[in-house]
Image (cartoon, rainbow, N blue to C red; front, side, top):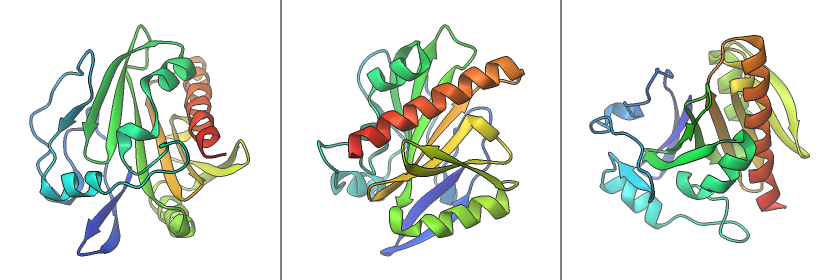
Length: 196
């Protein structure tokens, strides 16, 4: 997964491998002990002072969504509508907001802020080079793409002033991938609609 980090006012890209459970943050920071998803409020896992400062200065677009705060990009209701399943709540892990799902082969979906829209070409290039190419896709008129290594499970898209990603965990049969890909696209479209 492509993660944007801030370092002394400058941005740099880092490529992190997606593990079965996302428990290590980029940049060598410890994300804390693995925790189960809460049943109600948003939980912050493994934040440090720089992460907290970044979250406190988050600027939002339109009606307060989306933003670069991962748990303000999508609401649990949007995830439930897109995936047709109940969520267990939200869990913040660095720049990622994880939504647990009940009753599906997909156990969770991650929503994250990748970076500012003016870095779209660089972001696309990094994914193209490091993730087995890309397949471009339209997301309600917004530019988007699936990375070659995870296909329809991952969707990176640019809308408004930001670049976001929706990452679904599931598969691997063609039927389950088709359903997962449709749900990932539906959630991305809901996020795009907030900025239009």
